[in-house]
Length: 224
Image (cartoon, rainbow, N blue to C red):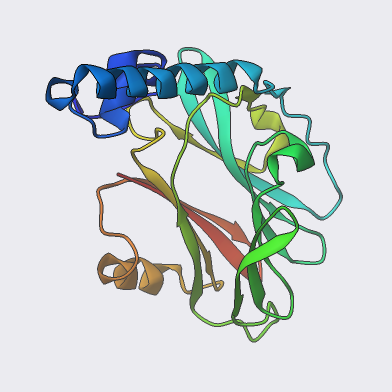
């Protein structure tokens, strides 16, 4: 995985240019100075961003939570998680510093409305199957890229009903993605066969399906 770009790579000017797909040998001195200014500003912005630390997610009766965490040494860093509310609604959450960061999230409501929202505005709104006993087969909730440990969100595995642990070199700022699906109870085997020609085109490193009794299971796919 020599082409993998990690967050540590972004701390260097050469790594930053690689992330931007810029060849320094092709730049004039003025262009190189311009890119150096961009790099310095990105470094300042990164230094000002708050680190979240241990994510405190208290248990809620009737709620399930499923996390994707990046292993780095002995530590686990939270990069995305799924929250299933006691009512049955499903939320896809990112570790961000609250409303100041726009509170980006996706939500699948009981009436079947699927939202992607940030800064209190819906960037995407679709009508899907209602989350009732009549839910059939599966619903794909998106493929999410742009991962890493820079938020400083520490994953407490005990706070989740399930954790998909990803080894280094798979999920990064530019590489890898997390796919999330809802799968009707008892449909998993058929769904696994169908998705081979569906949403997932890269190399699948791990796929984990979390059953929830009669409710749709949460399926998490890690791919490059």
